[in-house]
Image (cartoon, rainbow over all chains, first blue to last red; front, side, top):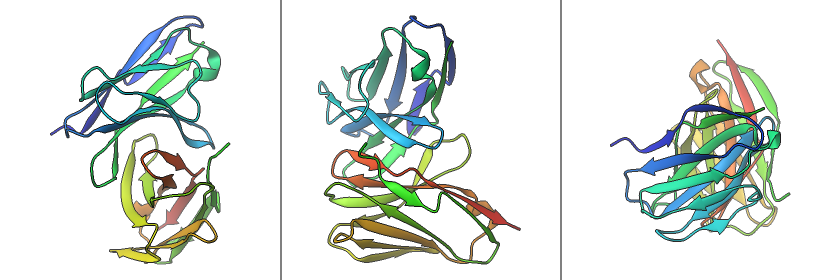
Length: 111
Length: 108
């Protein structure tokens, strides 16, 4: 039982490049979330999903897209990376007990 | 921004002392949760308190919730060096707003 895993752990992009961050959970959770964490800002919700095939915008969705084709996976895409997207990205899943389980994070640097 | 706020932003105490941190939130909630984050790592769930509860205990943790003031507090009793971390509150229903966090340092 791995919990929540994230791929990759670290990535450097040039402005304008695209990439996809992968989140996988093996707890059969319905809810999944993508957050970004910037210094002194806590976590801010980017997008979330309440079940397979569904996605919804969070607090800071601009510049990101997501997909939830399989229940266990939640993908976060950056179509054209900008320096303002330099951050640490965390994925989380939530089951019926309402506790969120977090992945280890992906550090993204956009030059 | 809908982001909640926590105070103090940073707290430094001696081992064995109690640590209290406060959280204020802006939206209606079903529950409020507290999480811990060790440096550079993912968040770990500590305790959940529902909107119809006023106080909850778990080991050395005590959480209170005042929905009329939209505020919560986390008390860690008899702190240990291993409690050194950042602590965040998260409020909401099925999606959550996190506070800005309190950085706790426990000195041995």
